[in-house]
Length: 290
Image 1 (spheres, rainbow, N blue to C red):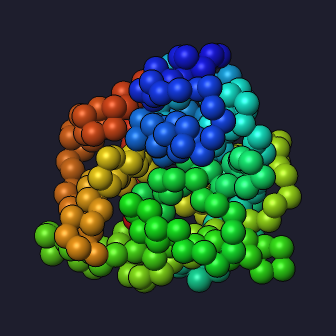
Image 2 (tube, rainbow, N blue to C red; image 1 turned 120 degrees about the vertical axis):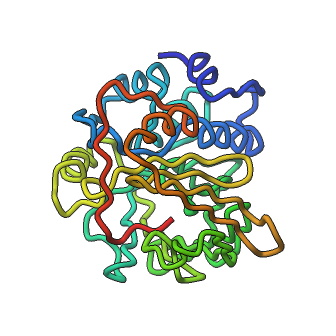
Image 3 (cartoon, rainbow, N blue to C red; image 1 turned 90 degrees about the horizontal axis):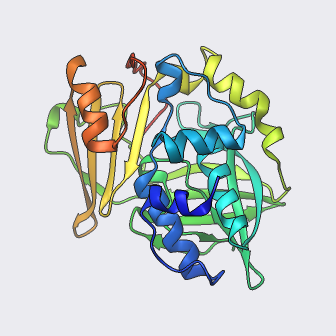
């Protein structure tokens, strides 16, 4: 494993000398625009494991993506290798369907400290809740980014992340009531504490999320990638392309339904993913919004 090979994968050609916020942001943005958030392994007969070398081979050499435990573990390794002060945190994801936070800690994020200031770096959430810049760990401050306005709020040692979105324009009106569309303008994303975590803390969750019939990830095949002006997502057979702020305070959300034979080609053309095994798309209706 080496950093040069990782940077070739993400296309980053900038400096690695300074451990500052500007460099961190640049490295981070290259990652989220090159490495998809995806769970396709579950739906093509592969097992997701948390060994760093396996994650590295999958993302860097096989040019795949991964979910939070893969993406953020790799990102944490890269940043640590560059000399950043990094640690892992564990988050509980908000379920809009149940209007509650999960009881299982399933989301791994990276905390980075620069010149005494702490930042949350999360390259593994995907869709419109994917931050584009590290978020300063400060309570109550609105932090506007291209995807919308993010805010962290701390109460009794627990931190809550939420996001305010713009209005949405959906040209294909047959999708205007899609269960994939977030109806609320302000959406809770996840909560976490500052207790340092290790990858070992996520072993059970990694198995559970890819095997349990109750898991979102067994009910939906998901592949999503950030672009320079928005993001793309393939959920089951539904391809969406979102352009942020294409008009003032308005995001453009375009939907199209693919045929089975179009899925493989779309993964290659839109997400730069070539699978080694046959994907079986799935999209059980439920609590996943883009």
